[in-house]
Image 1 (cartoon, rainbow, N blue to C red):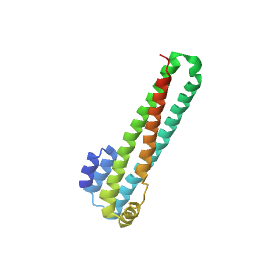
Image 2: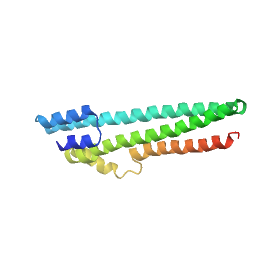
Image 3: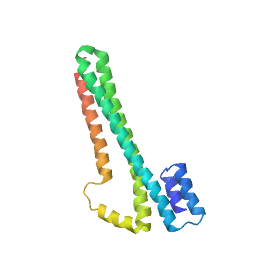
Image 4: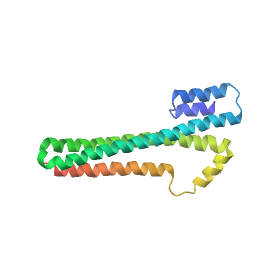
Length: 166
């Protein structure tokens, strides 16, 4: 029951919470509980990888449109300069959205890793001990990429605003 209430507080999907509540109602072996938790964990890892992949594609498309507008800017006049700034603002907003979504999924993964697996799965507990000594964690690497996107879009927006004709 403790796991289900923590999952509800962490805003897990209703299907995930239903699975955990069912596991609380019927007697399951410890192995079945760990297997179910591993399925949720692997789903969250796949969701994180998918969101990062699609986010990178979206950032690439925004960068291509920004570059195309930069090439046509000399002949386009005010409207091209306006859309140049709009694309940069969309890049900033998309970076913020990616940051919030990735932090949310990392919070869920950290909950499963630290609160559940470290106490119930001895192999995973040893893995956490080893991985805590690593310099560059999964979370810091993905967050750093998103922060770099955000900073790059800010610089591009400043450049677009400085080059906009008065």
